[in-house]
Image (cartoon, rainbow, N blue to C red; front, side, top):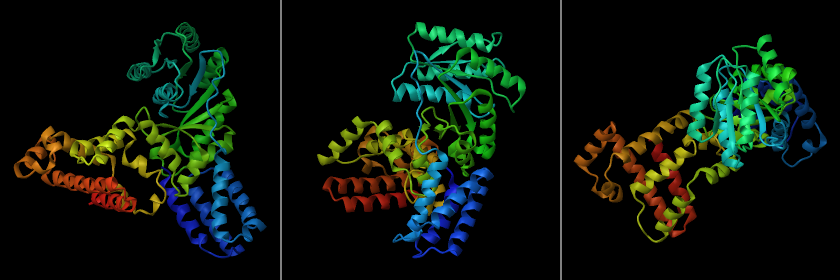
Length: 451
């Protein structure tokens, strides 16, 4: 996420970080490169101009100039301004309304609006323990209604049926009444998208908005459209008075222009960010954490929260007790660890949140990908339970059978057995309680995964 911007800003700020003194000359050169990095990231020009002016003013100020490490103070200043541009702190959903709280979702076609309705429903269900209903008022795309129904059934959300012969206002009112009778806490209403903003679309959604008076009106926008996302959001805000924005497809956005432009142009907060296709790939938008990611400092807080939410604590405790009792770490345990990583969004999702990840060469990061996890799990699934429990049995013909069973090469089987042995050694060090040895083991295992 935001890889290009991270690389450019990190390398630019690294040059000045170690300098003992800031001068007009090196500040000017640094800010010129920061400006170019932001423009290349497709950040809106007025936002870039204001950003650079505020940094310049702060950099020439007495507080920065007189600090023991002015270069690092400038980096902190850039971080602070990034946070300010994106909105200081996360602004959560306002659900303070007589149930059901009504959330209206707006956006252009192709932004991932219908999927985001389901993701938001799941997030409310999982994180806030709300009973959630969903309905589609998109009368132009029967496939959108069916898509939402399928997603709702998969996630155990209440789905209210609608038909293309109905008017959007009637669909919404009917669903809200039905939600009241079911004592639901929240109802999320999907609306029709278009390929571009037009008068008919705006007139229809304004009528719907006025009829149901939602507590939250969220604009769903594709982050890969850059500063156009902010311009489109402003057009919708002028018509609807939005309460917030959800950025989708951020995992595919190497630039970051939308995230850095929307708040400044619309005045509306980004409340959530979509970071993948899975229905659990929706995160609260924390400006301070995103700023840290952009500057290559990682996002350890989000990583910890993700681990707490998605790691099976019962299985983790069971494994810890097993190791502490001196029992051997086997391939079945290794498979469970790989599946836990998949549940957390895969290797790429975790790498994105680790500090200093931008210092690892891109070709090395590309080798550690999420498809690798699936292939590793497939190899272990091809083994018998006896082989998983007693890995020493896996030799010669057994390796050939395992490779054939999962449609992979013999070298793939050998590779995962090598990685397993590294992990097994690391677990033995963990039992001994030697943290330094354990960390060396982790580094060794990561190197092995890249071979």
